[in-house]
Length: 120
Image (cartoon, rainbow, N blue to C red; front, side, top):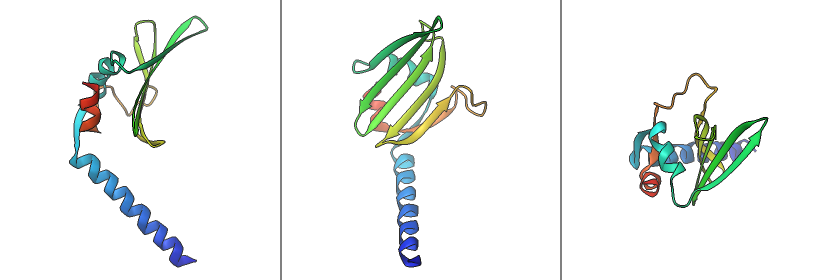
């Protein structure tokens, strides 16, 4: 049984290293705040708007298989960025949440170049 668990651990470690290498070799650093207008104005964005307790919340989604980009904002003019996530096949690649003081909209994140090309 231990041999099987060791094989799974080894596979997972190599898979994680391969994904990390893919991002560093084929990625470009970009600030989150540079992506926001690209997402909001993208021709294939899915936009939903909700009013809750007199506040307006917007959700923008772009499905660029295998990637899903989600942006959540507050305000009719998207005055506050609440959350930004990039997922690949259900796994979060990057997540920004406004309440996390360790993150900033000016942080540079590495995204695959094909995502950036798709958004531009």
